[in-house]
Amino acid sequence: MKKIIIVILIITGSFCLPSCKKFLNIQPIDKLTGNNFYQSKEDVVANIYDMSRRFFGKINETHFIGATGEYRAGEVMHEAQADNGPAREYVEVLGRNDLIFLLSGGRPWDGFYNFARITDWTGYYQVIQSANILIEKLNEGVPGVSATEANQFKAEAAFIRSLSYFFMVRLYGDVAYYTDAFQSEPLPRENMVSVLNKSIADLKTYKDFLPWTYSDPALKGVRASKGSIIALLMNMNMWNAGFDRANANKYWQETADLGRELIRSNAYKLLPIEQWSTVIKGRSDESLFEFYRSINYGDQNSAVAPFGDMFLHYPYKRPEYTHRVSFAYYRGEYMQKLYPDASDARSRIWFDEDIYADNGRFMMLKFAANSFASGEEDANPDNTFMIFRYAGEILLCAEALADLNEDNEAIELLNLVRGRAEAGSYDGGGGQDLKDFIFLERSRELMGEGHHYFDLVRTRRILSSQWSYNVLTLDKFNRGAWTWPISTSAMINNPFMTLNAYWVNGGN
Image (cartoon, rainbow, N blue to C red; front, side):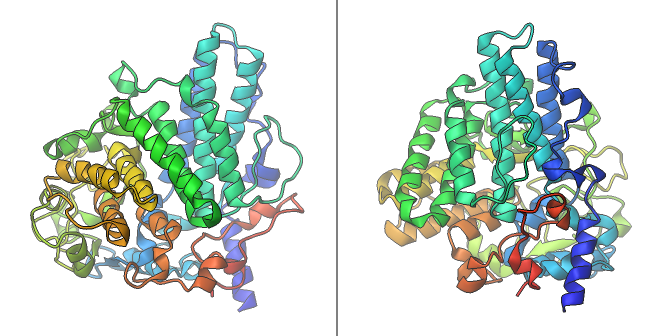
């Protein structure tokens, strides 16, 4: 077993880019050294877009949304009769939380999905480094950038920096935290609650420097806004509430207050469910932050990255002879739990007519509103990746209010989302019943957007067979069974670095 683990770690580490031979990849990229690059406002804007592109690169390099945020609780099965069916069995390997087997090499999915890249955090630290340098250069002064503009640009950089830390915490647990522009000393991993608390404090200083929204519709959801920062603050607070339970009330209260501020702004709105295609195409009034993608702009998604790719077949994927069934499907039992009847319009608009098919006839249309590049295209090139959406933050605020026993307001917010879905209003009681219903509502509303597994983890529902097909024991949970392994490249030139012991010890 020890030899197997060593081999796995070597394989995982081999995916690291050459640049990660330096601690946290702090060696600056040429154009980001500062003095030669930041000569104008245009340079600053170009760097902001570059940071977004680099962050999206981590999502686009594999089937990231599904692998990290959706499959690990076991609700999804692969269709063995689908084209290249064995390569899709990874959804069930993830559903068993068998990440050692997933990454061990020699598997049918190896040539498609590159899952070992999820274990490499280098890309996130490249984004953090860029943000740190940009903030320092803006503090020094950039020609043509006013004080007001500098504050706005710093807020955007702080947002993408904190978003990087948030994603890493949810993947790896404890991470090294730094905000110095040219960090050169090796750092140990820091407790994840502390990392997020520092990120929260950091973002609070910048929150009011950004506009609620942009007059240019091309920037909605694409460039960070005040709503983007509030959404991230809410999510970081709710994550900490699950792990810093002694201070949970503080985090719930902050989340509730931020959610109220977001709603009172009237800067965002829930579009009618019949206009869902507008939402999923991106840049809508519902988007808080997204990675906008459009074939009209020549955007190229990795063929395996879009979540919806796994749940479509002909005529939404072509050619017919290789796409008669979907690659994967949600268990019929689970779909019955989410949609016990057909009154919810999401069950009609987001899915094919047989949402309980329990086989490859199942089809999710939630992400299928976009056009193909050609008549025989089998991918979905126009797929925008939603990170934060107004409906999700309304429900997160409702969850925090329910945790604070403010049930009436929680129900009011819950019913905003259900009303948009043309579903019946929640008319049950408060307490645990309400909390459970809000959890299910988030599972319905945000399916496929990368939140479900993390909701299970932070609420500890992952410990219960009522909520998960893949139950973690409390012992495994406390030892980090919910995390991902960390590439051995993280230890190069850093004597303080440690890996996630649960996975180093064989994942058991």
